[in-house]
Image 1 (cartoon, one colour):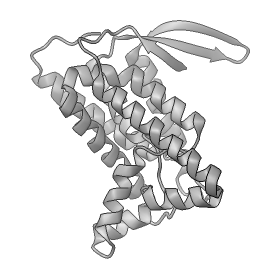
Image 2 (image 1 turned 180 degrees about the vertical axis):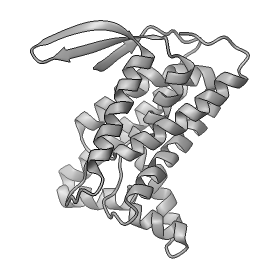
Image 3 (image 1 turned 90 degrees about the vertical axis):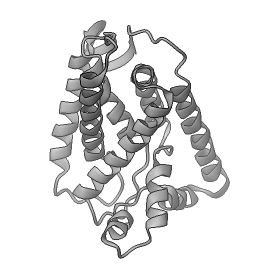
Image 4 (image 1 turned 135 degrees about the horizontal axis):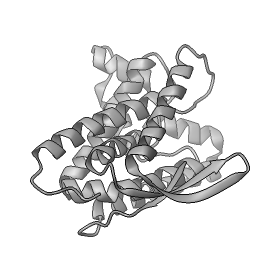
Amino acid sequence: MIPLRDANPTRRTPIVTLALIAACTAIFALELSVEASAGEAALASFFDTWGAVPSRISAALAGTGDAGPAATGVLASLFLHGGWEHLIGNMLFLWIFGNNVEDRLGRLPFLVFYLLGGIAAALAQVWIEPASDIPLVGASGAIAATLGAYIVLYPQARILTFVFLVFFYQLIEVPAVLVLAFWFVLQLIDGVATLGAQTAGGGVAFFAHIGGFVAGALVGVVVRATSTRRPMG
């Protein structure tokens, strides 16, 4: 199932969501420039410098490494992407679900939530692979936190979804709880399947998705329990 848009109107323009999309797109353009001018090796070095490297973060948390580069990498990694498909998929999810979460939390609180969700997601992946030297890049963890909050705050919101079954496809409106629960279960299945796997290159950081989603859902529970405004959807 691929979500395309939701039927969940917002009360105001989602400025922070739009700014995050613009920032990720601009930095991706910078990545393309680095690769075009200096090649793939330079881009790999760029990711190593600005990505969230689990071994570097583990060392910083243990007090045996430099905390500065580790912290900078965690934050900067939220704006990096490994390719067009990575960028477009993440930005689509951020636009569909981020605008409503921003509307519910408020602009500045949403920005703080988004960044902290991304940090929680990175730490979840570091916990699983503390010695990995492969940089984590992408907004997926922060967006997963946004999905976690959305499923709690707007479980019945209708999501226009592309459903593909072998040779047949259909566009249908599905409750958010089904779309996002399906997405989360896939992350769990794929995440468990990667445990103990030895890979020479990068891949999908499934436990960052899982950690971000759980963190976002917990925030959603708190917001829903303490909110006086009736939720939309």
